[in-house]
Image (cartoon, rainbow, N blue to C red):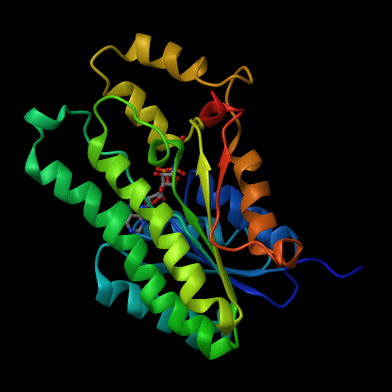
Length: 253
Ligand code: NAD
């Protein structure tokens, strides 16, 4: 078989048991990678990892630095090194206006979607440095590039990821580590189904989500995964510090 983009690479995917993480993990595996499925949902991660040619599940809570550190240590113990990180785990949170914000909601979304991305960078970059370099793709969102109603902690964290991606890219450019982000528009994953189901008017929200982008309809998780693999691969060797919208033109309007 001819060489594939991720032959002999170890790819660490947070939130890898579902949605965008699972779609990317499947594609990394199909292109030769050994894949670490790092997820809070260890049953889902274990079941999914078992379907991959060479997969390994670890329980990781990205909002807990000790858990993230232990997750990378397990991956290195199992595979010897880590080369690529898809820093992707996240939640939607409750839909609330700023002046009515439940502080626990603000804190939970910020902890997982914001601080969690930092913890994965902190321990993940240490692992990549030990491997001689690699690449990282963070998951931001069109919500980090534009404003939407009732999801301010989500937007706060996802916009923070855009800046953190630039900072990390510049800090590690001379260390053979590239750092980029994807900013997907709405994709019908379990996260978005929950977002629709918990909206004040779920039917109206489902219609809004289905008519969100200039390109009609929604991208699939595979459409996002294709962009993740491109940014993670040597095809993007001179691309670092960028956040790539996968949005059917949404942020261009
Ligand atoms: P999903 O709910 O299908 O998958 C998220 C996964 O993350 C789950 O397996 C879950 O168990 C895991 N997870 C949740 N909290 C965790 C934690 N603290 N530690 C480790 N794992 C945890 O959601 P998805 O739609 O695939 O979302 C993945 C990422 O993409 C999120 O960061 C989300 O904000 C982002 N995103 C999603 C969309 C979309 O429309 N689906 C759009 C833009 C960005």
